Image: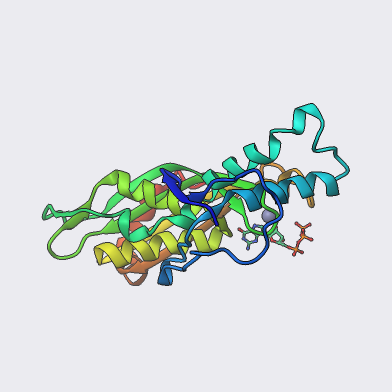
Length: 228
Ligand SMILES: Nc1nc2c(ncn2[C@@H]2O[C@H](COP(=O)(O)OP(=O)(O)OP(=O)(O)O)[C@@H](O)[C@H]2O)c(=O)[nH]1
Ligand SMILES: [Zn+2]
């Protein structure tokens, strides 16, 4: 295996242009419950894309496709960068603000990849929490980063939704968490059942936002008009 490099999309082994290496990834350690894996294997990805083009009846050596395996490998490395990032590193700072009421960030744009068909599903995420008794909060951008991290994995919408809720719960130990994701699945729009415009809404609620009807009602009231 070549040298492991790294950038904003995580660690990777650059392709040396030699296709055909077999065997399991070295360094594909799983980081416990977070499911973050080791490195992206660019050579292997390029080989697979070339094979897929051939399987589809294309000529991967024609001019327009020559660079395609390398481009697709780079694109997948970016789209699945969340496999190589530890969520614990995302909410890396918390601070006590004595804010004990709901904090809600809405309409976070979200692009993910359906793990069944490897085509996109996209929409918005809404993430809220009620801080603990010290009013411990985190930077608002960290919640959007968390959505991004879990979206950048092969996913199903239900798991993405609960993984974000669980990560907020683990890191902030808030009194309640609510995550709502609304998305259109291109696997239902451009193929299969072909229903463009159909939207799926999933939610995950934890703590007070699950057990207290009034807390949940407050959050849902703020989300009214946002959830279609
Ligand atoms: N619950 C859930 N299902 C999903 C998600 N993304 C895609 N699916 C569904 O996953 C299912 C996969 O079904 P299969 O019967 O194995 O695959 P398929 O033959 O390609 O199914 P069709 O899409 O109905 O053509 C489909 O019903 C998809 O709509 C998701 O995020 N959550
Ligand atoms: Zn799908």
